[in-house]
Image (cartoon, rainbow, N blue to C red; front, top):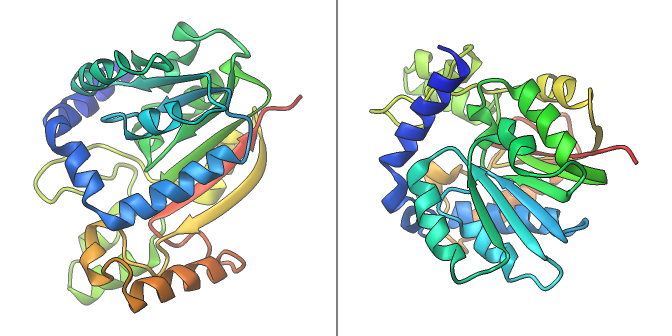
Length: 266
């Protein structure tokens, strides 16, 4: 499947989910907790001009548009239905500029050296047909010293492998290790690719410098098992703290997500 057909299949997948996507995201306490952590990582750097990759229903574009220091929040998403939804929201928020396209289209829509920070939450880059090209094009629109704050769905999620083996689901246990991963849904297929930390660094280091890495939901249940550790429960608080400790160990990237910050050389 060529890149255009692949991206069309991803867009078709999310078109079907677009209307209910926002309410489901808001109702999931793990997603909201992680979203707030990721937002703080973005705010640690320059945020005058932002670009979001994979804006979905626009939760983060709207949130950043309300930040005083932010002057513009651009966004790229390949899903027409999401573009329609967020364009309606942008009519009330002049800072927002939602665009239809993927990260490979960054240079088509934006001027070189015009963006302070590009952020990608919850693994939108896992659905890129050509990640190397996407990173190259994103780096072109970054200002010197600008950053990419990107989260990926991990290739190696230790608990998921263990749990699926215990439940006698060996194919599901190793599904992320294959060249193509089918996504989260048990009934619908979303062609994606999961990467190891080494693979990600091998791609990003060609154009950018690594500044930070951290992992999430290593022991704390991932968003699709959020009921295993209810909001504000002792279990949830303990596991979040334990995950914070694991950042300083070799196990930091064995959870559901990893976050990386890469910077464009001055």
